[in-house]
Image 1 (spheres, rainbow, N blue to C red):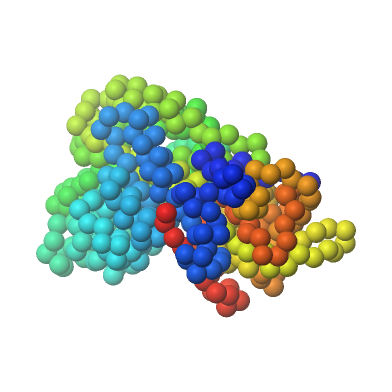
Image 2 (image 1 turned 90 degrees about the horizontal axis):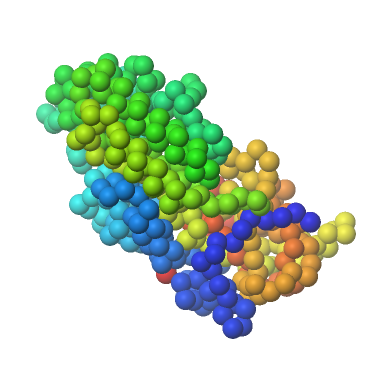
Length: 409
C-alpha cells in the first residue's frame, strides 16, 4: 500500500457519506454539468484563502493573481472582486481576461520569449511588461516608440539566491527568467532614460514552498536586494513584486504553510526596509495557494478489473485533463495526490486499488496502490488539489479524448 496526500480540510460529507463541494454532491454537480470528467471549483474555498491572506499579511500589501494557475473565466470574474491585480504569461491570457470581462485592475506580463506582437498588444492595453532581458527591454522600447506610446516596464531580476525546499527553484542559478542581479541597475537606468514609465522590480526566487522559515528568509533577501539595486540605479522602485511561492500540501507527510508566520515576519521586514524603499508599494503574486485546494476533478469509474493479483479502477478521466496527478508534471518521484470515492467520502477503506485513466499509455496513472472504500463501475472518483495547474496544464488533445467540463460553485 502507498500513502496519498492529505484531503483539504474544507471538504466534508453529508449524512449519506456523499462528498459535498460548495453545498452540492458530486452526482448533483455532474448532472448539472452534463457528465464527467468534471472540474469543480469552490469559490468559498478560494474566497477563504483571500481572506486568510488579507488577515495574515501587513496592511497595504497588494495581492495579485497569477492567471496561469487557472484561467477559467468564471473563476477570473470571481477573483477580480477580491484581488488587486493579475499577472499573465502570454497574450492568450490577456485575451482570457478580456473575454472574462475583467477590467479596472492592473495587469503585469512576465515570462521569457515575449513575441513582438505580444509586446505590442500589452503596451496598447497599458499592461506592465516585466522584461526578462536587455534584449527584450530594447524591443519593448522600440515597439513603444514606433507606436508613439510610453510603455510601462518593470525589470524582472534573477536573484543570486533561491528558496530552500522550493518545489521549483527560480533563483540562485543561470536562468532564462529575469536579468542577473548585477546587471539590473544598468537596465533600470536604460528604461528610465528612454522615457518609459518604470514600474519597479519583480523578484521571484521559487515556487511551491511549504517551509515558512525558508520563505521568510527569501523575502528578507528580496527586499534587501531590491534596495541594493535601487541604490545602484539611483532610483527607488515604485513597486516591488515579491513573487509568490506559497505552496499547498499535495503529498504524504506534507504540512500546510504557516501563512500567519510568514505575514508577521514580512511585516517586520517591510517595517524595517531601507530608506530607499520608503515610498515603494509591495505586492505578492499567488496562484496555486489561492485556488489549488478549491478544485476537485471528478471522473466516473467505467471498469473494475483484476490483473496479477491487483485491482484496477479505470476511469473516464486521465492525465490529458489532470497531468499533475499522474506524476508527469515536474515530479522526480511519483507520489499520490489525495483521492476519494465521492459516494463513500470519509468511510473506512477496505481494499487496495490502483486508479487509472482511459488513455492507451501506462503513464495514465491517477492513484497507485492506495486504500479506498470498495468501488464499482458507475461510482465517482474524486481527485483533490485540482484547482491549479489542472486542465490547462495538461495535454487535452492527446489521443482525441473528449474535453473535461468545468464549473464554479
